[in-house]
Length: 309
Image 1 (cartoon, one colour):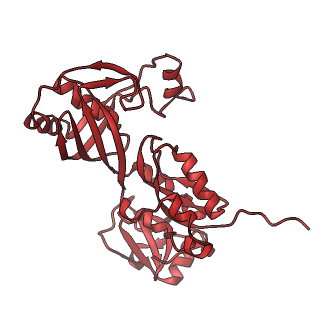
Image 2 (cartoon, helix red, strand yellow):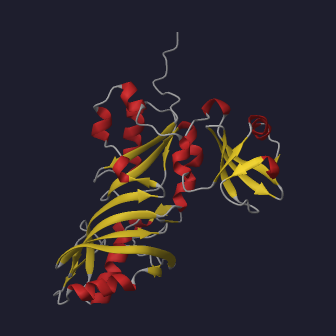
Image 3 (cartoon, helix red, strand yellow):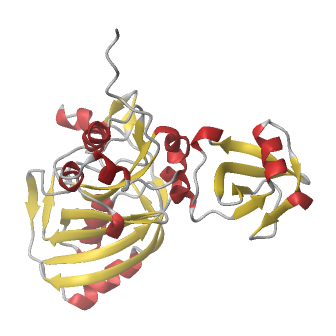
C-alpha cells in the first residue's frame, strides 16, 4: 500500500507577517510546510531585511495571486541621514559619512518633493533580473549593470518621527517602487546622503498587516485552528467591483458560455472590457469581463473550490 502524501489540497489566503532575515520564498515554504499545502505562492517579493505583510496563497487561490503584483503597497521605513552605503541599507558597507546640517522643515520639503510621479533607477542590490540572473548577484561579483529608469508614483509620504539624523516615514506607493532608492534620493536632495535602516510592509492592495500572523503563532496552533486563519480567495480582490449572477446564468458561465448584461446585477455601471468579481448568491465564482453587451469568463474557481465571502 502506498503511503499517503503529506501534502493536502489546501485552498485560501494566509496573511503572513514575514520576519526579518527570511527571503519571501523561504517564508512561503515554511508556511506551506506548516499547512502541508500541496500548492502555494506569494503575491510579491519582500526583501530579507524587510518584515511585514506577505500574503500567501494556497491551492486555487494562487489563480489570483498575480493580480496583487500590480497593487499599491504601504511601508513604514526608518532612514539614517548622513551615511551612504553600498547597498542603500544597513547591510552594506559605508561609502561616505557627511554632517547632517538640516532641520525638520528641510526634511519635510524633501518628502513633499518626492511625492507624486517620480523616476527611480532600480538598485543593483535588488532581485530585478538581467539575463535571467538577479542584479544582486552581479553586485556581489563587483559588476554594475545599466538599468532603465522606472516611472513610479508615491501617493503619500507621512513623516512619523524625527530624531535627526534619523527619521521614520509611512509611504504609500505604486508597484515597482524601491523604498531604499527613495531614501537615498531624499538624502541626495538634502546634500547629506542617507540609507535605509528598517522597513516594514503594512499594506498590499486591500490587505493590511493588522490581520497578519507570524510563523511562530501558526506553529503553536493545532490543525483546525490553523485552518481558521485562512481567508477565501476573493479577499485579494476586495478593491474590484462586483456583480451578482443568478444560479442558472452562473452555470452558463461555468460551462464556458457568455451571459447578457441584462441578467447581471453590478455595483457599478458596466463598462466595455471592465473586469469584475462574480458571485452566485454568496458564493464567489471568480473573475468575469464585459465584452460588448455580454459577460464572459476571465478566471473562475473550480466549482468544488468556490468559496463564500
